Image 1 (cartoon, helix red, strand yellow):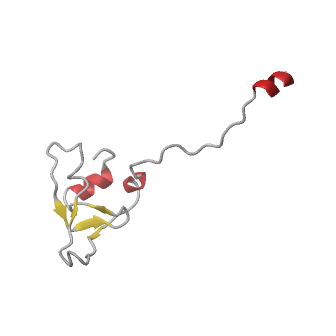
Image 2: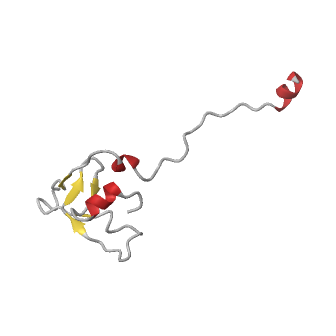
Length: 93
């Protein structure tokens, strides 16, 4: 038996943990609050970013909607209503 194990045994490679999740499950469990997008040198106080939910492929009418609000914890630009709530309450927004 030992001879068979010595001949055919292969050492296990340490797990790499798999592919990192593209979606942050923390967004569904933790408390998150909206804040304004920080100003940039180019846009100043009128800084806007594209809402992640409005651009989502699951939306019937994809639209590139600019918003001045974001989730600071997720670092994700989101419209206040209804996108902020959808992003933090639904797994597939």
